[in-house]
Image 1 (tube, rainbow, N blue to C red):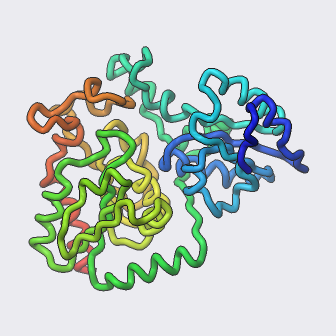
Image 2: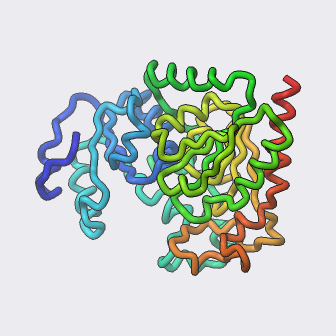
Image 3: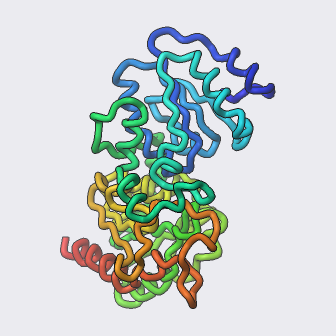
Length: 345
């Protein structure tokens, strides 16, 4: 249900009373953030809770058809002023036996926010305090620290699955690589994507690249007979589901890579502000690449950068060092290795 068009101090009174144990989970994050909590939803359902998910419409597109959610409490971005969120959550919690607020569990907690005092901690201090797994952290915040090692879960209809399989059949006999072009931060864009892809396309005639992303990502696409440009053409659900059916997924720390983490699909994640421990520790068939720390001493920074001024940039390219100094030959060679394994099979 959506929040009534009244002040939130009145809206919580309209929530329906429910029978049995009830739980409400609050999370307003991006696509990847929402995937990280899906294991917790499954656990709550196994414990017999009626589960309500308080989230934004963007998050609902990822969690649609999730059988572990009984009710959706949809909240528009900035619908409630930040200074009133504490009181809003306090009132909302009164309607549930268990109230789990995951806001800030990663951003703020394990990724320090630009403008906050903790953003300026020494790197060693940040690493000591923040080098914990994002997925495990959801269970810890919820009160289940003993549960670790869980990956995300996504759920799709039979029609969605059939359409994805049909698209994959069109590319039968090809080594299909999905590349996630960009994420929610400017350091989640690899500057050598086209160089790597063109190199591989030149050497192998049975490789196909599928490029995915949002509207802005369209500017990063290019034309080639074996490059399928799907940024802003596929919905986030279509792109996430196709991570199940391609041969390899490549990209920075984006929601698409979190989606690929739900499946056995081979994947290469290009780390920027996180470590393997943070993000990809439990993902199956995953290679985690990052720039050498002796070249990029700020990695891993465990920071959320909102401005270019706060992030060390390459002198000529003016792109974040963590991405620029991850050499394109390193990425090329890892993709080539996966291709050769596929070819031999």
